[in-house]
Length: 264
Image 1: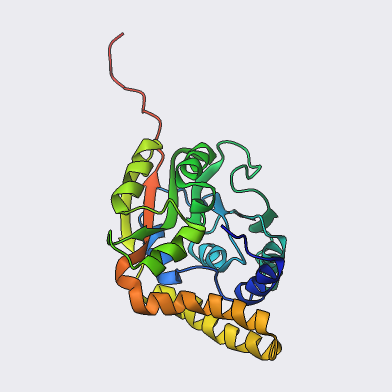
Image 2: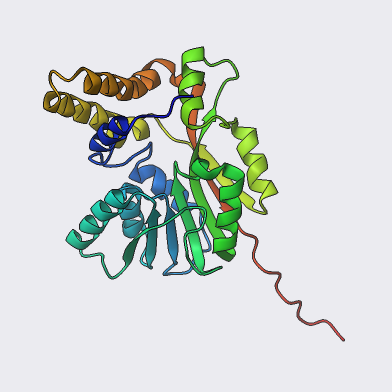
């Protein structure tokens, strides 16, 4: 398989880093998932893995009142989040960090909530779930989104597109089995609504692609790359019956409570 060229990544980030978020999701879905985390402390310690430029990190800052560590491997994205955090007066609560999702460099276990939207797949879902389990205190929650197949017969072009980035993508039952195998208890899950794909992701993406086309007018290589990027929202427009993003909330089981009133 041919790897994307450096020019591809240059233009990719010109588009993606200027979007409100780098994948499907919205505040309403984040609030719904957060509402399933019913036993969090008043000021939970939160880790956002694969934060990108921090669209969901800023939602978490509105939904919670505790400290948030936001980790991503792409420094320019972390720098953008740092600027937004400073602008919004959140520097005392939100700490953006350049780091590796598979080894985020955080003490174990120290978080009440690990959050990750559309990022865990990048190191393999099973591996990522193990990392998250170790980062959570007993009784802590994991909330994450993951792409899943809705049908077993996607068009070859759709299957090929997802295979480029997520060849191990499975169906709902596969993710549920992985959650259980990693020592979590499932709390709940739901499918992201269509507006979570468009309002803060695909609609701004199409606008941004049009802007970048103007920058690279007369550049056939850039035009081809932008056509590749534009194919993603168009694929969702035509074939969304075959795939979805699912929001999962799971809990690391709490420690057993000592029994009281038992005679020695």
